[in-house]
Amino acid sequence: KQEVTQIPAALSVPEGENLVLNCSFTDSAIYNLQWFRQDPGKGLTSLLLIQSSQREQTSGRLNASLDKSSGRSTLYIAASQPGDSATYLCAVSAQTGANNLFFGTGTRLTVIP
Amino acid sequence: NAGVTQTPKFRVLKTGQSMTLLCAQDMNHEYMYWYRQDPGMGLRLIHYSVGEGTTAKGEVPDGYNVSRLKKQNFLLGLESAAPSQTSVYFCASSRVPGRNTEAFFGQGTRLTVV
Image (cartoon, rainbow over all chains, first blue to last red; front, side, top):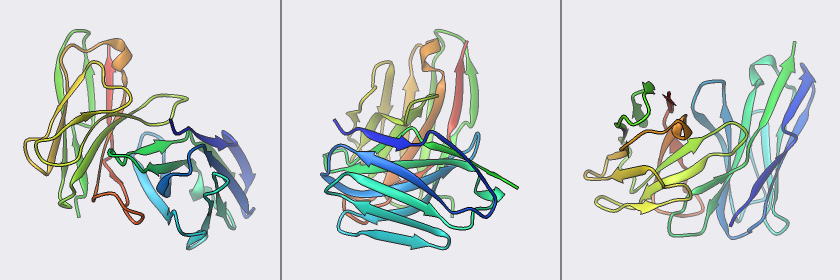
């Protein structure tokens, strides 16, 4: 069974700092990996999708990398802002009949003004 | 641009009561899913559907039933609610599997069973 782990569970940084969130998964048979943002009491907002054949994907201040063979992904946030405070979830898309996502437990990010 | 819409957004049930959660998507997606999110745990798959008229069990299906009579709708039913079913429920939809297939999520239903 696919296991997804996110480290750290919580992170607090001063505004303006660059930061890295980590995600690891146990089974490399994936279609893709998605990073989501979740604000308290809200739904999931998709940030980036990296296909299994890609190494990285960028959107604005966000850059996600994928090393499928080692089962790792990182989300890099440049010049963090208080508005980036949220929980970030990593999920891998299984190559199974369900094609469902396996989620990590998330990293709760706080950016201090 | 509705995407995935869940109804209701909040609900409080008494133990033993029944209810149905509705998920509707307007993207003509084949695949639909129900997940639950509990503190300290990642989202877990309850049931899923790969097309109209089909359903299948996910990781945590006990106590739930589902139906997909129309392609755009996926219903999650609780026949006899238990406190252990207190959770946040998310519906998602996607196209057929592929490297570029992205999952889209609803805003969630916060259910409390007392």
